[in-house]
Image 1 (cartoon, rainbow over the protein chains, first blue to last red):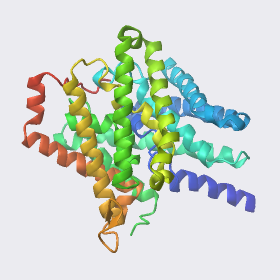
Image 2: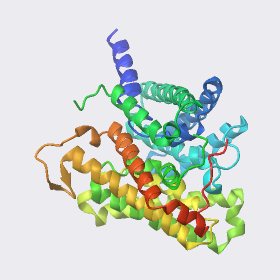
Image 3: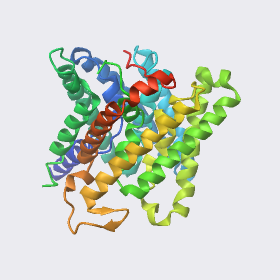
Length: 186
Length: 198
């Protein structure tokens, strides 16, 4: 029973207190730019979360076996990220160009790399790592859906132009981050 | 979110991770962070110019991203030995400088003025966000204690990063509009503001 409580505690701690997106800023750009309308966000969120899951498991296994040559980690994570991007693209996402002629892949690349670095910082190579990975992915998926819903509201035509700017979304994310940390700054 | 992006919008998105994570450890580290990003952008631009046609292709672009990541990883190993008082702040966010979209945003543009304007605005934003976060969140500036107690402790937390960035970007947008910078830049044809396409 105490094991179960500990597992729930680790899960909630990783989901809320160390939330991947709001506290560590991991993949925040990917979420801000790539979130579609709420209806398709459930499917697209699953695809991106799945690809992040692949990167996480791969980084977890490889970092364990390559621990003695840890200077190669960035290169390993980079390759993992490229494979994950390929997976996301195979489902028709991250197509075309973003701003200034940049390929949309770059939006996901930083997020996927950050996730792997963040994960390896928090693991101890035991069963609890799987809870941490699951909680991180659930945290990412939830924020993806929430941001998609918020963006849909901000995009409504009756809203004034100023509310459609990115900093409105930053303010909402600030409130969400404060909320999940329990307003502990007060 | 699908409207044409303003210059401030564009820079705050292209360098979002740097503006959020790079400003968490005070003004001095934010300055190191921002200058490292500009340094990597210059090297990447130089490498790109050696063989533009190759680096415009998909494989070339991946190699360029890998090079950017490699340079930032090298700096992550070297700089703590130079800035010993800041050494504890060189975490994995610093390695991620190499994949910041801002580094790759001006590669195809031959005009140096666009590069300078974009990176000056980025440096300005980094300084504005970090000054506000250090002053309000820690009550100090450049490690000199100004207030005995932090006036607004939220500024030093992740939620404060979003909040201060939103406020700073909003003020910068008003300033650029007041000074007609956007029009000037557009007339100069040195900045081609793109739109978020999807």
